[in-house]
Length: 93
Image (cartoon, rainbow, N blue to C red; front, side, top):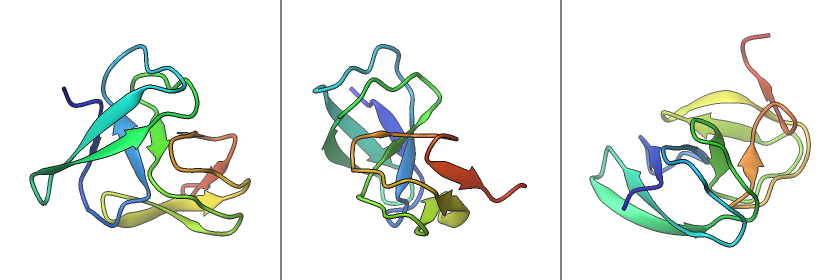
């Protein structure tokens, strides 16, 4: 079962595509560009449609999605944590 999707193997965040992700869940992600899967353990509940961190990121790091920078990390994020507006500032504004 696929739990999250990313486009580029260099992405640091991916989109959760199932409901009910809980802390401790073992998740499988699909890398679309490479047509391969990766494994990750959720550290927090993550709602469907929200992002999960694929790598540890420090304040000031770039958040990468679709192979491009989508924002800057404003609070440290560990792999498996919920990546959203509380820890990433969007590039849009």
